[in-house]
Amino acid sequence: QVQLVESGGGLVQPGGSLRLSCAASGIIFSIYDMGWYRQAPGKQRELVAAITRGDSTNYVDSVKGRFTISRDNAKNTVYLQMNSLKPEDTAEYYCNARLTMANSFEYWGQGTQVTVSS
Image (cartoon, rainbow, N blue to C red):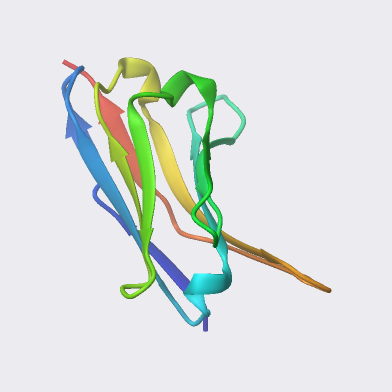
């Protein structure tokens, strides 16, 4: 059974930092591309940051220079370090695992809430 379990969300003041973690089980983590998505109320889910199995990364423009995605294959965990947080970063954050070969496999975590407010 595949599980992606996010943690690290919470309430933080503008300018603060949080680190999200996503622990994966039931998959060969090292061969999956991993991503963090977010969805704010009334908005579509958007890709925030992604890291390939080869450690290539990409970010949505609004978080470049503030967020850093990383992975630890020994711990089957992907991280999202979020600095200089803004109220517009408030959203539910979801971990995603994707493998595209002859067939595609995709899994989602349950989400963790990030609220940026004074």
